[in-house]
Image (cartoon, rainbow, N blue to C red; front, side, top):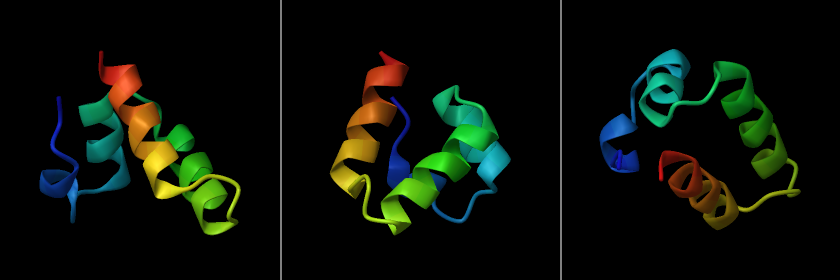
Length: 52
């Protein structure tokens, strides 16, 4: 599993590659979190689930 803290400061592309998701998905999740549609815990759970 990728440690999200170690991903801080990385580019979106690097983080996306680390989690095995397309960069566009990270942007979509970020937009959902910012808009209150998705909370950070939900986003992290989604990341964790995708890495399993």
